[in-house]
Length: 383
Ligand SMILES: Nc1ncnc2c1ncn2[C@@H]1O[C@H](COP(=O)(O)OP(=O)(O)O)[C@@H](O)[C@H]1O
Ligand SMILES: N[C@@H](CCC(=O)OP(=O)(O)O)C(=O)O
Image (cartoon, rainbow, N blue to C red; front, side, top):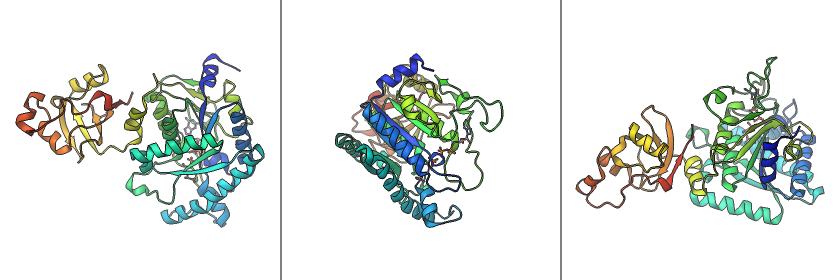
């Protein structure tokens, strides 16, 4: 069935980020399913033939490594997991390359970490590389760089759903497609009879977020996060002004059909206008260095009136940060509602918090900015 909204989105989707999860790429034994890889590659070739640029974010390295190394279970030790991913990643790219070659396309391996998205220079470099790959007509195949990711430091991307959302934001793709092993977002546990797929979500509020559970799969756990990690990723992209579809990666022809406007899976509509490049980086890619707690007046001025943050509305400062670092802005209810680049270090903000700007000279001596965070350097995280 075709529908008008989906048609409209399909028409503007000149760039598409497709994320494919471990469950879609591996068989019941955990090894890579070559038929699936071929199917995804064939579908990507069709999108490319329609003139669309495609980035594939592919999981499956750990799964492929487990298969190739002949392991009977997923290692629990971090270094062994990373080693399995290193073995599996080369298989993954090799398989994609073989499947893309008959279409005259090349697979390009792009490994990224959360730190690459955090660091402004590396972030822009990644974008330039992706653009150059498009110019060469290659298909970027992105995965998290598992060799260096250290989960304990919490700087890890967490999962490929989030990485896909950050890549979508990086290249300003109007559409992200998350392919998984269920038909879309269900209104209840998908394994329970009577649960139904929600065809369209216009507002990703707390009620919708609450529908998502963890991955229901017992046994060897290869994927991370389940539906809740997908919805967090969807939120990043819809808040930045892009659209997302979650669909079943084993449905034949799923990608060309979505791009033909067919009613497949769950469509999440962009929440408002497209957010500017730098604001996307500030809002979702940077790891905030500290927290500013604000009173209700400051939260209202920023969230409702598009204002900047003045020192007078700051009630507390947490963490150590320098001028130029990104900080979280937290309202009186304890929830983060925005992120912004601060004009003052944590040392200075601690001195001026709660004070009117007229007192800056007296307190700080030399000072330069009226605003602690200017509205041009601030991104609202819409509820
Ligand atoms: N409301 C829901 N709708 C759909 N799936 C859900 C929901 N809640 C939990 N899930 C689980 O999320 C799983 C998909 O996530 P995951 O296993 O991480 O897959 P992938 O490997 O594709 O990233 C589904 O198979 C299902 O078990
Ligand atoms: N980098 C890991 C990705 C793990 C992951 O996020 O898996 P999934 O939840 O299936 O997307 C791998 O390639 O195995």
